[in-house]
Image (cartoon, rainbow, N blue to C red; front, side, top):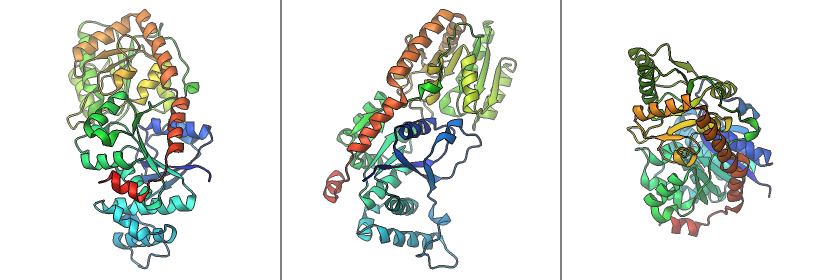
Length: 422
């Protein structure tokens, strides 16, 4: 039987989830046959250029209230309930013992059951042999249930919000860790946290770093760049941009020569603009809005330093291993970041970048001044950063590890399911 992987994603495409696109492109370059199943339509206004390179077909699986037409739909005025019932009947036509397997769905939300039945039917009709979801939230809930309906094994990658956010339901995560064929996470920090929190249930978790296609990211020495600070991110709490603006105010007070560009958009844009104005930084700090990926790469490679002052949000939300940090390091721009989650595994203090405590604008300003005024330090850190990216964050090597996991996954028998969930 030929191998066909179903990627289950909450939304596709998403501007901020370049790591998913990089991974799919690397699989496709290796000849893997992929179908994408998205549970929500896209909602961004800008997209990365590389999305156009993905060959996989995208299937959108709607919620019951938006259902789809089928032979089993017997209402002229369909409701969520009639769509739901029709989808179950359609699934039962292609999945043996579907009605008895429906017991697996006990306790799940109706929309999860509906989308899982839809996915299960499509997977059977399209010859999908393995499910892989990103984030241990609804995408994995749907993949898990569809796996139990069809016998197709599933795996998922856990990142950060799906592990650390205050909304994470420990019991739900535990059962996913128990009955997934394998669980992947993106840093040793995450791996240790999952094993400490969930004990034996997390014994099949493996760490595989996100990666980049380095053929598209040429290194450029930062020796002769102007005193420009750049930061690229969504304008949300966990990105710590308020601390970056405070640090810029300190740099201005000590007469450090610099400019700062913040690339991105988000819910805090008005708040951050007001802060720039209140601190009198309009001539030195600029929020330039979102940019296509190619433009972002050019802007990053013009800057003397990349600032990533990430923090843990009040709701527990935090970054795992931001792709933009990998990209800046690959491009030759020295990075300053914080000791949040697995970031020090990437930005190794005074080896591949500088690490400062989160929320500490004064230490951030000191680190920024060091890199703005010391070309030799910039070159040393950026050289070592590029070497690290090449050795541990090459997407073609890391995606090969993931494919080995797909190959090794076996369907779980009913007996195994009962044992793992007892």
